[in-house]
Length: 317
Image 1 (tube, rainbow, N blue to C red):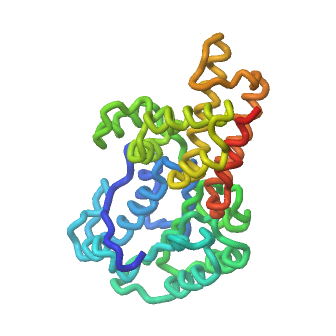
Image 2 (cartoon, rainbow, N blue to C red):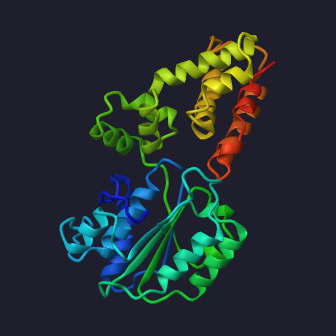
């Protein structure tokens, strides 16, 4: 947000193809008026969006991105560049992007550039737009002001109106290959990256978040709590209370991995991380599918309303 300091970082290693596509367009004088970065949570879409914005406003850009030293870069690092805007839901609000936020973006897009260059705005997550806000954004996309580049970030692009998607250049970003993810995590100081990357479903930034919240030990703790719920030694309400700070999205992701662990153990005739004998192979498959649906729901703007108690109840006999 304006007034917040910003670190100018380049794209992540697995984003090289998307970055090359973007910079080629700029170098050829074909800058898009709107870009949609779409992909799973935890793969660095916001990092790429910020690198794109920094490249657009840098006065001496190079192949790797913004120079970090020119007037434009220094203003961005101070969070005070007048030609850059970030639109995200309020930290303690509903998680929805309302029409007031898009009106501010529209007003920003209609201003004259302070440095006779680009104006750029990042909007994330785009699927958090309510109907009125989406309609207001569509008007700006239909008649894009000259020199403005809007960068939309979305975990679930299918939830966006087709009219918005069709007016953006789509960058579909996938999970990086395992080698790239492990190498990058090592550079971030993660000494045993493989278990974390597996827990994160291959998403490196999600693996970092897991490491910061306890990593594999936290996963074992969740398995223990689910096991206690299954046996009746811990109520779903008590279990949910202990995971409130972690949040629904990360809990559902860990539970997905736990369900997979149980399924593998059952297939080998072994005891898994928890005693779930009441769940047969079909039950585990159905549970995994349900957790997948709930994880996608947890990535949406109203994820705070997803009941952690309900997640633990899924495992009960």
